[in-house]
Length: 489
Image (cartoon, helix red, strand yellow):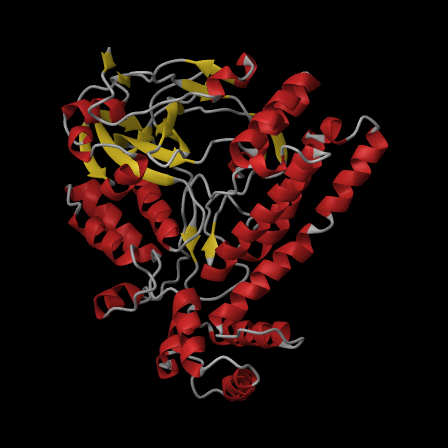
């Protein structure tokens, strides 16, 4: 059944569907029994040029549930491969369907994808469905990341399906509508590079450049320029993760976008107590994707992308390999420059000195030693409330404080300007794990979405430092059991 898209504001132009067919499979979402809207992102709908009133009606709910397809949509599931915990395998959209690319009033292009919309040829035995808790979790975390000014996919809506999904127990089914600059992944190129002709790989690369990096189309070697641009974007992205204590949890190559957005909020979480070895994912038993390893894994994933496009870099295989290695070798320095700039901002430093890295590392070392909360430590520095932290009064911190204050005097910026920089760089609130769980429990078990709505409101302006946010700054009670997250999204 087809719905008219004019009233809702749908304005689809489906460029991905023009790529070689092996890169995707055309199919429609599987209808559900009794869909119901549980949360809708009106602010995002406005950006997309969509009519919120229409989309919150029965017509819109039917679209978000996959029961109706908007006019001019072209629904498909994308093929891709990926290294999952280091092991290469064939993958694809196993429970997600791209229904189209929305062109906004500003001329921007965004993928509209239904996650949990039924089986696809890439489901690998799965049911293609998703449960309510993980879909709400992705909504909360992705919108929090957006508010933190970190490139991310976003969430437009979550609907329940009226059907049960069998996991360890029967759970309420749900579908999330995800908005992304695109769903092109490192794994998309690995699929093309491993199993498709070079000409199809070239078509994919040209499409990617046109969609995300049009400024390099005329470069002498635009495929090398594509690698260079992706290195910069991923280095910048992962630096932003580190700066706020975000741990992705599953940095497989199929979870690294070519656009430089954060994607796939499965077993992710934010660090409370500062510990570089922090791991939340229940399946990451070796700590491959621990907080300290995220920058390293970013470089490893980029190397896999470079391998996939080697035939495009140069006809001479050895020269292509050398070109790739030369660029990948620059990643660590590029990442470090982004991270260091961000840490300087968190400490109110507006110029550069050789000793800054040591100053920053010493603070982190003290935080680790006294088991200080990562976010609250920088929040306390910003509002000068260090007495609320375990660092206060310790000899190590007292010495560090003297060095930091002396460092601040060696810059021309006023104290007020430095403090403002710190406020703009240190969030007062993050989606604390215990607060997220509290919201999910109320929604899933009791049908109470008010806890989630209040949390989302607090997270929408993380740099405001309002008294209303204080309740969301509290750390969880100590527990002998480590916090664990699961791959449910």
